[in-house]
Length: 134
Image (cartoon, rainbow, N blue to C red):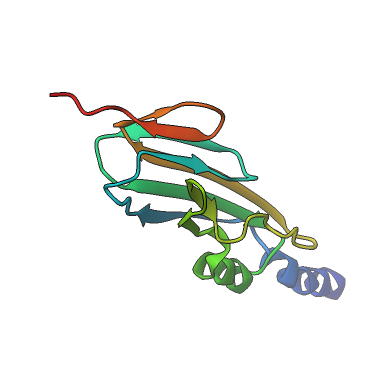
């Protein structure tokens, strides 16, 4: 009997490392002068065109093998944030271009990007503004 109680109590810390999941939203304002931009990402993503004028990023993060406090730390840090930068062309890219592999932690990231409908998908990850209709 005491063996089973001891076994149950010894397994409690492993139960604390459950699977955690959260969806993070971010809005990126586009300057009116942007006529084309690229998306630079090592993570796959889905695109949806919508009637708004900003890009909305919906990032669903699932993590197992980590404590809740570790999961929450990654959520509030810039690990899943994106930025709009201008080099030779405007580019939307993650703050951390490549997510470091976390030891003994399984992480799954799914991204959905809502892109203004007045852009059209051109080559690979390039989006070009449609000419305005009169």
